[in-house]
Each structure stands twice: as C-alpha cells, then as structure tokens.
Image (cartoon, rainbow, N blue to C red; front, side):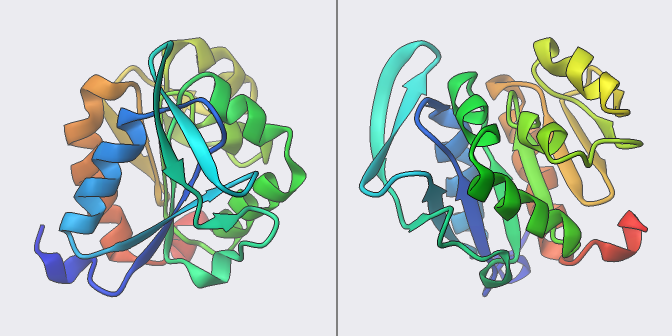
Length: 188
C-alpha cells in the first residue's frame, strides 16, 4: 500500500477506558505510515487508559470527545477492542450516534476483537459477514450477522478481525478499504 492511498485521509479512533492497547497502537501506526492523520475520540477529556490484556497499559491523550465529534470531519472509523472498552462505549449515547453516523454516511469502519459490540449495539450487523473475538459470535448472530472464524473479514466497507494475532492481516485490509473511501453503494 503506498502512502498516497491514505494521504489526506483522517481517521477517528473511538475508545473508552480499558481498550486493548495493541489494537490501537499497531493499526494507528499502520494508518500513519500509510499517510493518514488519526485522532483519538473518547468519552472523557484528558487521557484514556489502555490495557495489555488484563494488565494496565499506557495512557493516551484524547483529541476529541465523542459528544463533540462529528463523523463529517473524518474519512473512516477504527474501533479497537478489549472487553471493557466497547462495553463502556455501547452505553454512551453520543459514542453510538458517532458510530452510526459513519455507517449511515457510507464511511468505512474497521473493528477488531470486542470492537464489533458497537456495531451490534447500533443495529447494523444484519446480513453482514463478520468475525470478532469468539465470545461475541452469539450476539452478532442474534443481530443477523453471518459470523465466521477468519483472521479478517471485509463486507460492505466493514472490516472485522478476531484478536491481536490477526493485526497484520487486519491492518492490510483496513488500509485497503479505508483507501477506497465511501462505501455507500455497497450498503444499499
């Protein structure tokens, strides 16, 4: 993937406390290496705490609050996982409106591990071929998704992956789909 593919693109990374740190840092580094600008969007100002599985990770500065963020200001959305993070996001009305605005605008979304919880919460998984951390498969299937156990899946501009071991494949597919841009035609 050449740097020109993502040059000028701006990607929102939506996280709350307790995100899986490597699911933010490695995709973010790949996006930036491909020329994209990234911003961390979260629920509270200041910093947001990452986790390394169950151990405390680093704190990252928050660029914008979900309640103040507008999907129109971004080209794509990244949803890292971790069990705590998406559970906090899905009960925050502003965060879910932000995610839904990306979907409704046809903007590409990449989500790894427990991240697809947000997509299930906003009711857009029906008919999507997806993967995730295995414990989410029941909820995604209940929402109408076709859940598969694959390292990365892309369907209608939604890229999903299972876990940190899948990050290299996730990053390649995420950058490919994000570089394509608007996915509205695929979502009709």
